Amino acid sequence: MEPYLFFETHWLHEHHLVVVSYTWFIMALLALLSFLATRRMGILPGGVQNVMEVIVEGFDNLLVETMGPEGRKFFPLIATLGLYILTANLIGLIPGFESPTANLNTTLSMALVVFFTTHIVGIKLHGAKYVKHFLGPIWWLTPLMVVIEIVSHLARVVSLSFRLFGNIAGEDKVLAVVVFLVPLLVPLPVFVLMIFTSFIQTIVFMLLTMMYIAGAMEEAH
Image (cartoon, rainbow, N blue to C red; front, side):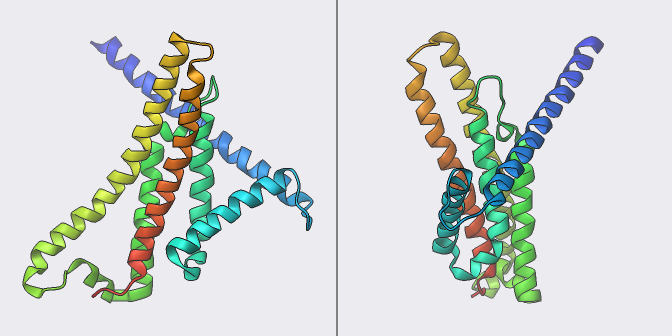
């Protein structure tokens, strides 16, 4: 029994180190791309600058359409989450690499950042009146509404973390099985579908983040 427990603990420890290593690798990669994109900026963009401008402009348009112009103050957070999640999702499709977003610790940490940011923004904008978001519209329903609201806000963390983790972890396992069973042309449609899903999961996480923050910015009725 002891050797088995030791092996399990050791394996989990090594696995977490691998995930953290890939996380730092993605951070370094994004930093390098940012440097290359801004090193020689010109009116007519080309190469890396052109690609990064398209991505950043797409994020900006999505943010403005969802939150309005006042939401641009949250662009650094939203764009950082989007770039990291998209890169982490796609890197797992490369043989020999693993998606950090296929690990629950990674997705949970991002979900907690969104959770705390949402309530910090609400308290900063509304002060003590932010409590009204949890009280409901009718005073005699307040005890019930407080419980429901608290549970719903905590459920956001579960929803954000498990949705991204489940989809990406499932993709990685499906791709590994398909490549092992049919290593030639058959996996290509599956591969294309997984690229599409990686983009969709990134957009979903960004949209939910923006909706949660926008909800905290609204006045309670």
